[in-house]
Length: 286
Image (cartoon, rainbow, N blue to C red; front, top):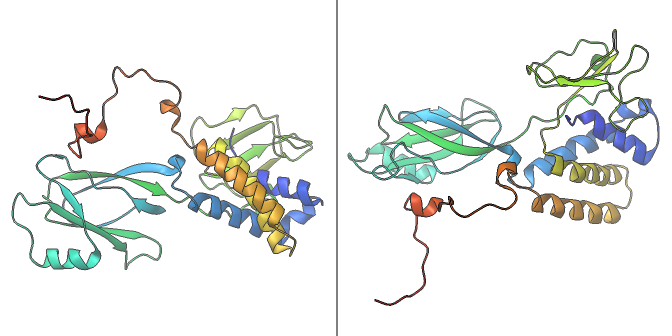
């Protein structure tokens, strides 16, 4: 299933009472937005790890939403190491380019041409070499909760939003609503339709929640915490629940293909294979 901003809005209405008309209340919308931002930035979630690449030397604008970057990996990790330096040190190095066979120096600083993008700068990199990197991305901030007029009149068709189908007489609610959706899809994503929508079904569009299933519960409790805070209520109880849910999500933050038991027959130490370091072994004598 796809989690959507509509789910969190309906959860808060269930927690604090009220009907659909209350979904446009500023406190409710702000609570969902702030809780989503806090959850996505409180940890380097494995769900948000992705990769990119650059070719050659010079300046490269990193993709939108880059939060932090891992080491730059050259095509030849043995003879061409890469070294991260501060922007000030990079300027000193770039003023006098390093000689051949020396390390490739790189740094990251804010792009002067973009309001919210980072700039990757390389010094001494061969023009034809391609460098790969992994990074954590920041999801797009939430905007549509599913109760705006544009969310229900069929005018929202932007890629990446979640469209849900109800029936010919009822608008779709979340999976725990009285009138749960009959089908849903991510707009613009081929093959994403789940379920079968009735003819002439009413639709609701809201933002896609870019989170894993283990991150959903702390998002709910985080929204409750923010709701209490914005309404001037005591937040100690909700903070306790939120902290517990976060700890459980931290423990469950694993990459699915690597979970469970594995045989050790084919396990290889990445650090040893790439020559980063060699773990100490037992002293067996000469």
